[in-house]
Picture 1 (tube, rainbow, N blue to C red):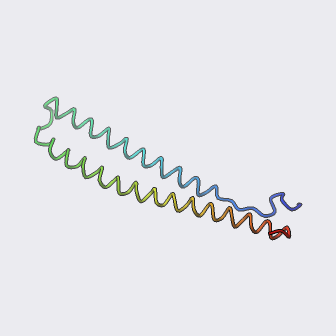
Picture 2 (picture 1 turned 90 degrees about the horizontal axis):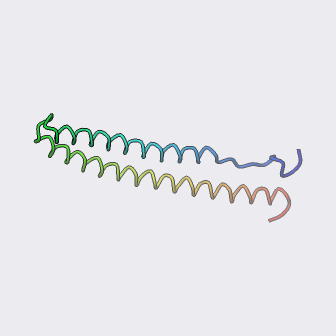
Amino acid sequence: MGYGDGMIRFGNEGLDAIQSATSGQQERYQEIWDDVHTQLTSLIEQGQVDASIASVLNERDEQFRREAGGFDDSVSGQNRAMRDVQSIGNEGGSAMVRAAGGGR
């Protein structure tokens, strides 16, 4: 196997997979809550659930959105850190390849 034929390789595909999975989970829990919220609101509007539940539902909605926003911020920070790790790894890998090839 010659130089440049995969002898030295930095792989970071796993980090991409983590970022994609986490983003997908964020979208999914938002969809689930929105669906539950819509269904409960509909039941209240139809008179099938006591109207006093509406204030509790609104409080829970605000709480969910506040806590989800904090989680989303944390995940975004984590994803930024993973991208930084990928960049550093790519730069370091390139430097190692150059050094191994006798260049700088």
